[in-house]
Each structure stands twice: as C-alpha cells, then as structure tokens.
Length: 171
Picture 1 (cartoon, rainbow, N blue to C red):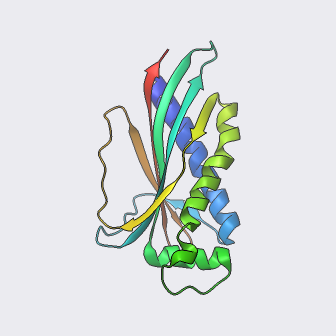
Picture 2 (cartoon, rainbow, N blue to C red):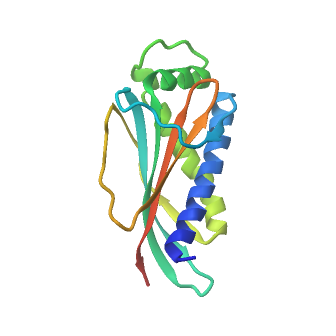
C-alpha cells in the first residue's frame, strides 16, 4: 500500500470511529454509519470544517507532511434537533445561541482523535473550525487529496462526515 493510501486510511478510520463516539456522547442518541446516502443539493445546510496539517513519522524516522480537511454537515432541521439534544432546549429555528455547536462537535472529534493518531505516528496540528449555512457549496481539491464521505444515521437525522487527506511532501 502506498504511503498516501495508508495515511488516508488511518486518518479516515480514526476520525470516523471518534465521530460516532462523540456524537453519541454529546447528544445521548445512537449514531450508526451508513453508506451511499446523499442529501438533496437543494437543502439548506449547516456546515463546519477544520483543516488538518500534520506529519506522519515512519518507523525509520522519515517525515511525511500531510494536509486535509474534516467537514461535518447537517440539514438545518437536523442541526436544530441535535442542538436541542445537546443543550436540552427547544429551539425552533437557527439562531445565535446554537451557531457554534457544530464547530464544538468538530473540535471535540479532532481533539479526541489526536492521541489515537499519535499512536500511529501521525501528529496533527489543529486549525480553528469554521461554520456556515448554505446549499450547493463546492470546493476544488488538489489531485493528491483523497476523499471519503460517510453518513451517520440517528433518530435525530443524518450527519455527513467528509474526510480529505493527502501527502504534500516527503522528506
């Protein structure tokens, strides 16, 4: 397996398993991974993203620089339900009180993933998450970036997790 594939696989597996644990704990709901579920591009969504920059140290102390992103997204109605579950409140619409909740979840997922990734020789430096609302949001990725989307289902609705990662240089 190439370094790119191996590193992507390790990062993606750790982030996915941590995401389920964090979502379950924060919301008190059970999230399960699904495949092939996509939401309509016309839906209004809450999206939060964080950049990943780090280094993979090989067994021979070789450094491989990596870069990627982790993106969480929800249909806006699901975002509000998850906010209500976390805050134990009854918000009916998106407002200032719940705008940072998605960024907090994402920050927790990345923070909780760091020790498991370190054990695999991957040292991630975190960036500050960003959140926004929109639909039909797109971005172009460099050719070296690999990407995988996973949908997590719960009684609150679906959560989409997108992991991208790639090698930018090898020393």
